[in-house]
Image (cartoon, rainbow, N blue to C red):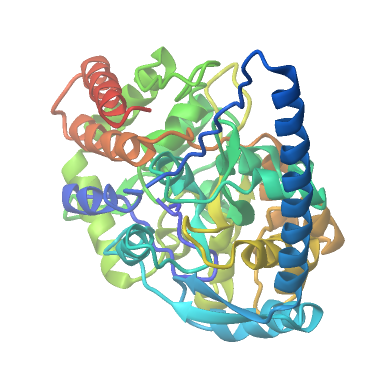
Length: 482
């Protein structure tokens, strides 16, 4: 948000309907060296005896080398090492993580110590220039907490370690241990470049009190975008100054990005061959729908309302002045803080007629940066923290709130579905979408934010804008060789 988000669930996430300045800033949020081994095949001349002698010698040398390697591996397994773990989260994370995950790991692995190092992300992004610089300089940390959305672009640069070989060798973790969409985000081409961890997704929050006041049945939230449009229209209300006192719905508010709306319209961002498709016909319809909202309800007036909400520091949902809004499961954590004095509910985001309700996920992973000095020890830590034991231990902490883990089995064991509001999000996880894993993922995200802003301000036709995005993305992909 992540990453958009994709901020972690234990950090503040305040998204309001975006003005041009806010959208430009957010477009930077997700702006997201290799080595190869060349094996030369042995050759022989026509002398069979020489070949046999060479083969015998080679076999003896190989056996000696294998014995030496085994001795080295045995020594290495007994050697005490300290791995450096970089993380970007403030607050109570370090204290909670050390107590619930690091301490148990060190107890189970007495030869491995974990040094936790806070390294902030760069600007408004969820990437770290310090991490990239450390990798380029050959002095990276051994493990990093990393926005899953960035894995494709960093793996393409050769900045992350492919752990597939280590996973296959020990067989302790498998792709099926994680939600399908989350696993897809850590895979780039034929490699695996991280293990999924915390995650989040999106649904619709709705104000039952405003629905009732508008003559709507508060127990029947909209299930299609057509129903949403009709219900929202009845909730919009202006004051004497001509400004909105309350609004029914703003498509780009909170997590209502163009990415979100494209999926709700049945659009897609890549085809079966992983070719990027920003100008998919349904994507075009979604962008035009957003532009129509801006025109019908006056973009200046909507922006004024959003700016006023932003000044309160409160998520617009909890102001009691918004009928419907798309946002994440982390918003449920706000309840203790804001204590809304109106009735509300959560439901899947409405979809266009004939299309199923969907959601999309973001979140975090653990990676081994390229050049780690303690690769095997780092992998042992990855297995623990992103495996069932570490995931469960951290999820059981007192302030976990409404977090969703990357592992269905852990969520089941925690009985998260017993919370009816959180269950809405959990039920959508198995079929959740993720943004394309591509070297130009961040570039594509920024392009969608750019044309979203142009469209809602009446500065371009939806089809033409998205044809331009397709052209720009393809050119960028060709440039980076993806």
